[in-house]
Image (tube, rainbow, N blue to C red):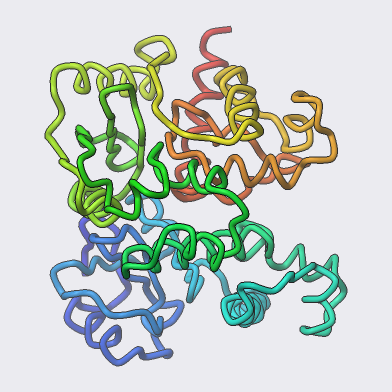
Length: 360
């Protein structure tokens, strides 16, 4: 069977792969993986996630092939892992389920270590390696999802905010593309957001802007998935096709991506806390072709003990490329989680480093 990327799954037809996916057949785990065009995620055949329509499924012999095609690994079945990694993935899934069930409690690392009978340092390392973030960051994201669900279900803003564990509305700004919580609760009603999607070597890039500036830069595996994500996030906004101004900005971003122009300095319309703004400004000073560790960024802004907070600010960045959070790595150079997929982060860094070498 040939996939759209030209990689073959050994001795298997697309029909046989699809049957294995429908039956969640574990015997085919490690034989092939399948990507879902609408979500940009790839999974094991046995993944317990909701199955896509047949036309949305694309099959690959290797996880690396799926990632080259722009897909990112499923955080539920971890198709890129095997052996001991699979065991770790199962343990972290249990931890995530526990955090979801105790979302309002203060879950310190030491407390989780007691619950799961693991040394705190080992638990933290395992969680970061599998999930790409800390347990505290996962809990914060779960609280944000709870807030979104509550306000869309008709709950009062203040009630939903405090029920989800947020002490103030400022903590929600960076996750809502520059909209206040009240505006988000109305599905961004009355907001005009222009959007344009273009093809690039990372798959597709969506750039969205308000009247004041760019409010989102998203990377994904397909045009339709990116547009659906925007519509789901802001169902009541006036989503408009890109105008001349936005198309000019998209062209500037693409020139920067391909090395055919200077770094795009575009106006941004993103809300952030004082600390997040400080971190994002620091990221914008990292030269192309270079990286910094989370610790170095923390030291650079005069907050050497705020390494975790720096990582959280990077994860909250809604404008890929314009705020280059892909240039921040773990101590030792290891790539940490990236909102738009570690494979894209690796590709971005590799291309920037090649460009820097060629300029010398």
